[in-house]
Image (cartoon, rainbow, N blue to C red):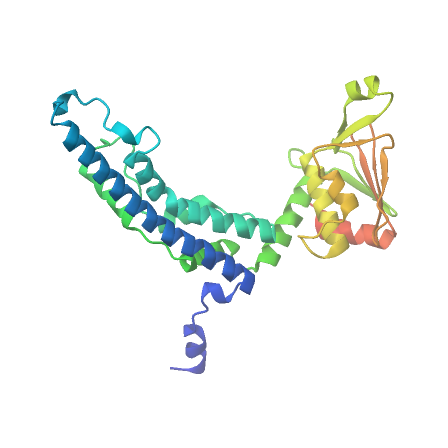
Amino acid sequence: MSLLDKFNSIEVKADARISEHDREFCMAYHEAYVKGRAALKSLRQYVEESLNEQQSIISRVVPKDEMYDRSFFLGDSVHAHDITNSLRNSHRVLISALVSYFERTYKVSLETDKIEEVLLPKEPDRYSSYNSAEYKEYYGAVENTELKYEDILDQIFIQLGGFSFQEKALNELKQKAHDAAWNRYYGNKCYEQKKAVISFSHYACSFDSWHEEYYHGEHEIQLTDGMKNIIRALAYFECGDTSSIPWTLNTLLGYNWTTYNTEMQLGLEKLKSVKCFKNGRVDIRFTSEAFAREFAETFLGNEL
């Protein structure tokens, strides 16, 4: 075997590509998953045995065909069927927990459904009989499946497409900002740079005229979803980190921004102010023309 072949044969495990904190999170959730499934199996067995025991006792005085409620004295809150559903759904709970963690931590988009398709047994056609042998085999396979957090990580890294979490987050941020700055239908840009100001003209914000009329001129301004993506890109441009958003910019990402003054001073190193207009335009003023040009070239692009 050549040196190159030996190098290519080295397998880098998924959990070696994440931080120690990430690994601790995954291991903790996996341990809870394993112990939770064991508890559900024990609980189901205990409930079923208890129900059978009560049925046997009551059958001394009531025929079985007249027993309409098998819960007896356990009540409606205890059903083996509900425990079984929780047991079968435990895999999805683990996958969802790990995927949500990495999405929140690194601000990336991941597809839970694709991971479930690979790691979980394939469900039969829904039009098949519920009691068919095929469905019984499927449910048996689901209950006997035991996931490892490393397998979930493998699928997450496949979705990263060879990029790190940070690289994928930045690529997605650039794409969202670019999409917001262009009219996809006409294929033309909806922004203009003039010296240190970039103006976004394609309905970047909206004013609540009713609120303005009845609250003595106070404006309730809401940025569009696309403009909020521009703000997130501006935060990265300022801080160099997808998880860091200056307080003044984070305020704009809330449900609404209510102010008597339509211009917010940012006081940052690269960003000076954000100003909204009633015609839907939003102006971003940078502290220099060079910063404005750099942001436009990096996040907005020159063509669709």
